[in-house]
Amino acid sequence: MVIDQLLAEGIKSLENIEYTNPQLEVRLILSRLMGVDKSYLYAYGDKEVPEDLVNDFRDMILRRTQGYPLQYLLGTQEFMGMELEVSEGVLIPRGDTEILVQLLLDHIKESFGDDEFTLLDIGVGSGAISLAIGKFCPNAKVYGVDLYEKPLQLANRNKERLGLQNVEYYRGDLFSPFEGREWTGHFDIIVSNPPYIPELDRDGLQVEVGRYEPETALFAGEDGLDFYRRITAKARDYLRDRGLLAYEIGHDQGVYVADILRKEGFSDVKVTDDLENRNRVVTGRA
Ligand SMILES: C[S@@+](CC[C@H](N)C(=O)[O-])C[C@H]1O[C@@H](n2cnc3c(N)ncnc32)[C@H](O)[C@@H]1O
Image 1 (cartoon, rainbow, N blue to C red):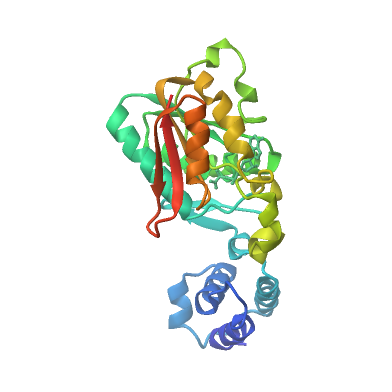
Image 2: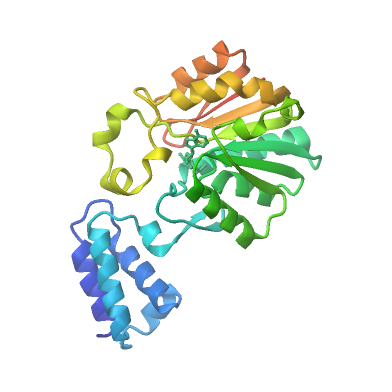
């Protein structure tokens, strides 16, 4: 079977599946399998595809029709211009999270310039936030923590691939690896994109997310605010005076998370919206 025929077959299979982009996805999958650029597929549509790759392609398209995420099939996701490895058991980094990173980069530039600073990322997942800060800010000393083995292994692999020396990962529950007086008031910035989906929304999730992404990265109690409460209650112990706490939040959680920060004594509490005017980030100063 030649490239064009196989692509057409894949497009037909994905045509009526919600949340897919058939034209793009079949090309991404086949180019990855053949180890060629997408442009090769356009230029050489009449080239024969080896039998074993035809079978692999069909298997992957079948998985896609069942809602298996494209990024897990391809094994990578682009984030802030970095190609990150992603795999099952670890949240796929989202474009929404780039808003949080951009806000941090602006804050860092304004507050520290080229001076050294320390940042703690709670719940590192693939390493998206911590690695972006480590990469764009050579003056950063970045610490990251996750409770689970899979995200930590992946974040460490991504760190190695990017060749970053200024990022270190720890395993534990929120601040637990940082107990002891030497960590008191240690961080200039604490950032987290924690699990924030209310248990009550579990059944309404899109199949790609609900069936295939790890629930340990998604759910946060009945109202989705558990992690904001737990992290905020302790964050001031670990932040320097006037240090920044920054969260990614769900699109309707701004008021509630801002309230949690104020009650814990944070000042300059702000909710930042995304381009579609939905709440996306909350920040406050210790
Ligand atoms: C929503 S994901 C965010 C991943 C990554 N920061 C990103 O933005 O793509 C939340 C992460 O928090 C981690 N996590 C869940 N409970 C935790 C806990 N008690 N302590 C530390 N990390 C936790 C999960 O394993 C998951 O990797």
